[in-house]
Image (cartoon, rainbow, N blue to C red; front, side, top):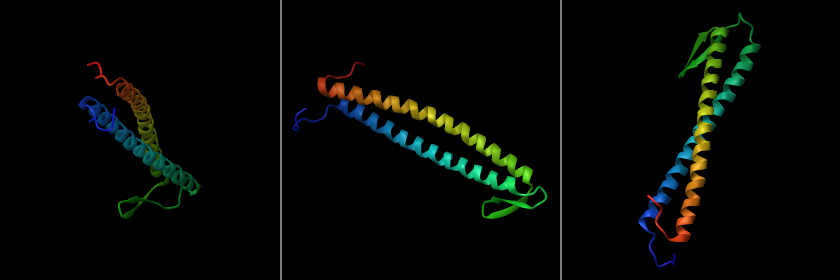
Length: 122
């Protein structure tokens, strides 16, 4: 395409789809990173909690408050939170892989269309 030509609408559409997929990928990666940070925090909290004697008072955050709880209840809660985050990270990792593959295919398709100057098959 010369610099004086406008991009054909079908090519613009493909590029828009690619950009949308890239934005989705960024969103998924950010969510995954957030969950991984939550897992690290849960691991650290569990380590510290396991050092505490069973009879010692323990507290948990509930918004801006601290609420008294038991060591056993907090350990169970943290392990459940960690397991849930792990499941969500696994799902996001699969979505990330699918979108990356889709992006790669879209880039190839766009390059082929730009070089051939032809409309994609329906």
